[in-house]
Length: 370
Image 1 (tube, helix red, strand yellow):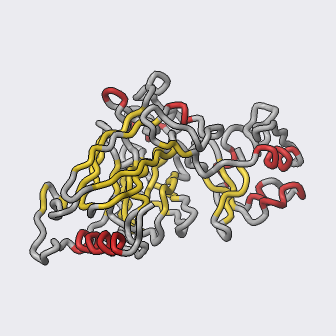
Image 2: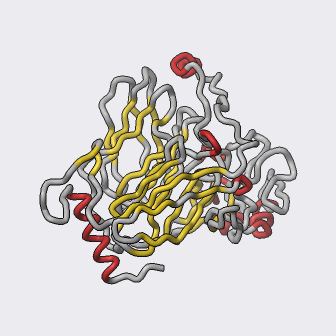
Image 3: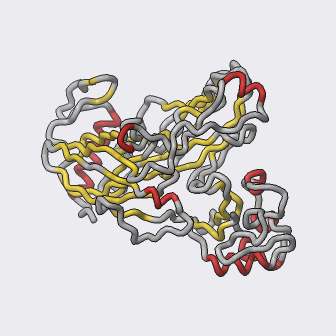
């Protein structure tokens, strides 16, 4: 844990300088390849993120988009972005960030906008990181209509569409949230994530698994890494004056079984692997689901039939057609579903075919739907 006070104030001051484009002396900033150069006296956390076992995670898995002839023609075939691996198990699309260290105060947002585009009937980039209140531009580069529907729990939800050739759509997220699932109401395979931070100390790994977080004042920090499929890693690091700290992180492939993983699990590098915060209480969930007409549920909330929990046999991921609806209404207002009365359906960020019930008033998840 980082001591607040002086450390928080120092980091806050550096952060403001980064956001404003000033150096500590007040001189004009030095730019290198479009980014602010290293501020004298600060350090850098740099490293590589890998997956420990790639055997069951082949790259280039083709998605079935045969139901959309236009996208099939435009794209020529679409591969999944869920797990993107490079040489020697390097892992792309991991959000690496400082979770403990910056001042509690919100920092000024960059004036430069970030952008997410529809290209070839996919969201690009697949994972985007930005600061709170930074402008987000949504651009449709395809000759087909675009829909984008972020599903935040700490920010206002919005749902926008744009025909071919339309100008950019602008949006912002006022609150920190890691990470917001993004869906398309038109094309179910289109998925992305947006991470929103109070500070500028974050990075998204490239194909080679690399990340670089610079301009950190000397001190001890909590570094976290988040991946949509493998959960979160946490590591404590200490940065000296002008030091570049090499921090390599390894996700355990077994963590992909997020529904049953342990929060005490350790990977081979000794990094703490946290289970996702969307855990349900199986026995409670079983009781609720088994009391709903047309649904049979096992001990883990899975149906005794072939349909996912919380659904009838109408087909998988039926709940994804009802995102934003009241969970109590979704279950037919059955009395046994009353505990879900204050909850709404949201997409499960750790299960592409699942939904969660979320209570916005309490700021917490209710029970898993499937």
